[in-house]
Length: 287
Image (cartoon, helix red, strand yellow):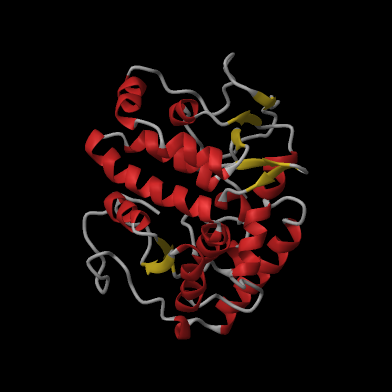
């Protein structure tokens, strides 16, 4: 939800928040949510991580139209102290990190059109609420998100946002987790994607590599297609430990002297769970 925007849009508060204006949603917009929710929840059976599914249940997110941010926030705050706030679209980096550091998740209020069900360039309310918010009800993941926000504010002073963005991309957006029953999805970019929910777990094309902080922060990623590599954690506690306890100042300095890693690369030092064939034709579109 970050962008290099210099000017705050008209009507937005100093922190870039706007009213959700839930009553302004049309019946067609609520129907789009219902269709997306119904097909995605069916697809995620056996694929989504247990904390994500618990979050959906605990927050009472269901097929009943676009959720009201205030009602959803009241339930979420009782669990982990987080709230959901509406923004007009992508927000500047420092605004994004400031909200996360204070346990506020920024979400777009618009929803995609009926002919955009399978792919949308800019995250909409379905991606933000369905993909991200359930895991914010998990105490450990909620702490990780706050730690990321605090780390982002520090990264601005080190001019290292590109490296830190890779950590968000490969965990919060496109992360996989090992559970007793096998690999599961926890990244919001996968959980809210009809096609990538299957591809990330079941295709023989991408690499699946155990998470390593420095490795992830060196790895470039794709924004226009399914990922060529996914990184796998064993638990949110491990993820929080590796990131919250890390001294990022020397890490950023070290990364400046190390080269970037291509999205499809496999290194000799990697702990590889699956070496992908990279046989998907990457066409520049997720559709």
